[in-house]
Length: 525
Ligand code: MCA
Ligand code: AMP
Image (cartoon, rainbow, N blue to C red):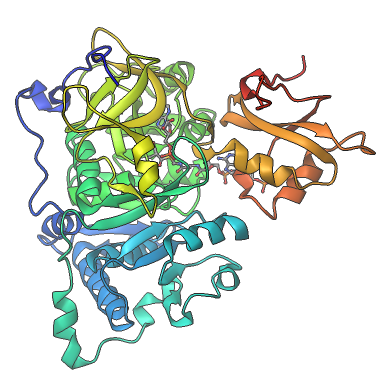
């Protein structure tokens, strides 16, 4: 790639209190690992509350000290069970303190956590398992024991049962304790499955340092401190809930109430009941909260953050009108944790994702405006796919570090604010979940009434985008109801990928090479 940066994002020092010094480097806290930074943050004042399960009652807080002890105990049990640094472990279940303990125990032992969406069906889970070959699964979903039957049964454990795993014998406890918190900054810590710009899901490998950089950037930019309390209702199997919500809470030595699903009543109730100061959500959540009679409770928080999909300027203004506060929108990806954010102290601009976060360089490709990024937060590679990394990065025209291609298209205005204006990648984002059209096409194409099919996203006030299927019916079929197609595809696809409408057409639009041109798919008038 040649040419110069299009637009010049304002330097990240604008995120620092008082504006900061643009020459200043962004340093990760020593020793440069997540687990090192967490233990340093949580060791003082061990009796302070850290995590609470929703509905557990105000006396049921897990304190900092209990959390460090439980995670160390579970880590030594996992070590006694034969797991060793670098082994991959699937972790998935409803959000809970037990799930957070499972995740952190794995990281403290140097295991590589593979957070996995609990609504995955057999084929989706089988792909992840075949790709990253986990040795263990700490999971809690109906039917998954059968789906994971090829794993060693002793290493297939629900997060709720981890304290009951056999311990090490006394002779070995010393060894196992010494295996704690020794991961190096470059050690893989999490593999997040994402289809990147195209294709089947690939595992983005994030190191201890990548994850620390991602959490540290937002801790600084959002003034996240030990006085903060987050109501966390995002799933812990995506970077938003996990890499920002949970990791940030632990890094700041703050506290969080964990909710296992999104319920506007529970969110708004818990904000007041637990003196919360922070809420993070995807735009679909804010859309539902905006319609709630108690939405003004959001206005009493120190900060509300939105991300994972565009927050429309209209919804931003509606929320500001109803709560008296401006939601802060930010932009991130599985491969990079967080990239840009509206500033805490300066203008939070509706429709913009703000300025690059501490440590993050952003530029726009001169040919087409694709957003290119680099920094300590950017992932190390795709698991087992050296060729995929070649396509994912472009060289720096000035000989510096290569740039990661986000697949998002952007513009930067004179004040340095970044706006996402489109996507170069084939992706539908519904309610903050990513849906890859080709995977859905393949599953729907198995229905006997379908001769040809292509799905695309159409704008939706509630979901941001909705999956719609355009279908050419097979001979002998004159209609196909959406419920019939959804019920059929449920066997193959997680529910959020299922189409919400079916449009019967005579033919799909195609280019000269016969490839379906999804952007030409139109809803009937
Ligand atoms: C649930 N359904 C959906 C979705 N969620 N359909 C389409 N899109 C969705 N996102 C299905 C349900 O399975 C159900 O299907 C029907 O819709 C109604 O469900 P409902 O009860 O209304 O939904 P819900 O369970 O309340 O879930 C909505 C939700 C959820 C809370 C907004 O989708 C959610 O938690 N989204 C957040 C995802 C997230 O964390 N994304 C971050 C990834 P049926 O009736 O047929 O059974 S992106 C990321 O991490 C990057 C780094 C970033 O920038 O943050
Ligand atoms: P994922 O691959 O699940 O990590 O999703 C990352 C993608 O979500 C990004 O590449 C963007 O397309 C989208 N995204 C995240 N935050 C925002 C935002 N604030 N506005 C628009 N798109 C966003």
